[in-house]
Image (cartoon, rainbow, N blue to C red; front, side, top):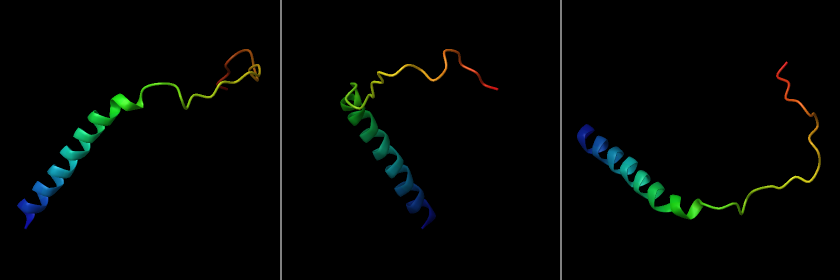
Length: 48
């Protein structure tokens, strides 16, 4: 049972990798980008 479960797990990981690579081309662009017209809250970045 363990070799079968391991093979199924590997197949799922490979399938997800292939799907990610095939759909990655479609995720390009800036349709979901947010444009802000207001000034920044602070002119300098402070990480205090």
